[in-house]
Length: 347
Image (cartoon, rainbow, N blue to C red; front, side):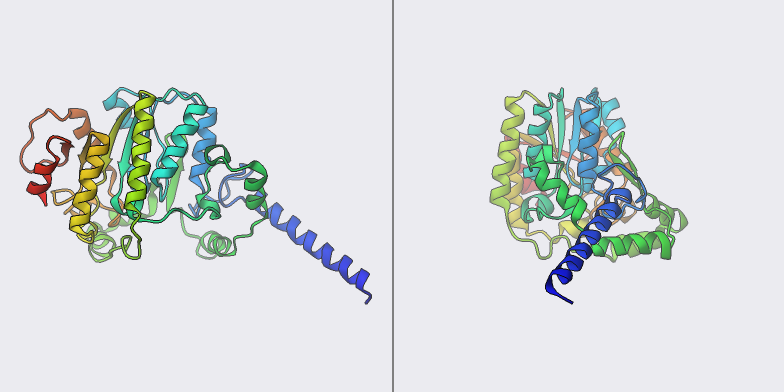
């Protein structure tokens, strides 16, 4: 075989392979980004960052947003709307960080969204200790208009990359195991629902709580770096932006399950809490030792609390910081004037 013929065959094979990958990614679309198919309904690394931004571009009827990691998914946006007097959307996404929250806020300003209120949901480990997300992970990519990435850089990576690991997972979940969906996503509210976990809880809550919460620490803290100073500076920029834009904000520290909280370096956590309060002016703290965080029956795992907990958080916020509570009440308002005393009393 001469070299010219060999090269022609080689190039043809490469082009056919690329066309096959493009067709597969476009038609089956496991990340649910292109929009030609909703075939992937098993929540296998679907990119809800992109999906939510795309939806919000076409629906400007919201004026308030819940922003944070997947842990804040169970703050019910509809209940928040009822209690706080705004039309809320859940802009929570997996592994959210401070820098990307800032990007979303700037993008919403450019899109001329009428943002009147934001609930910022903070996680000490994921948002302040952890490294930034890898920019090339498709399921973690922001919409190009949010990130500022060029379209000719963004979309070829979606069409041309064949993610073998996730495709294998999709095939296994859909065809080999034929499992029912573990999650259900509602783009109109921004929430996803834990169908598989709810079914297991309904079947045997005692076993579920023991296996998935009490005896199954997820290890989120292990292996993390310490980017606290960088991320506090980013948080400062977020608060500055909200103040400049005259957007009301509510800062919430999520109620991690107690086994996770106990993994934190106590002195570092106290310093972080003080810094967050001083930067923001005040926070609602639902973490630490309390009747919710020590109740294994109120969690899907050590990271994610149930909807009933999210409802308690929202109702406590709606009551306001002035309301006198019982000593064992869930949730504390901590401001600059009282943060030192609060830390001494609670740590």
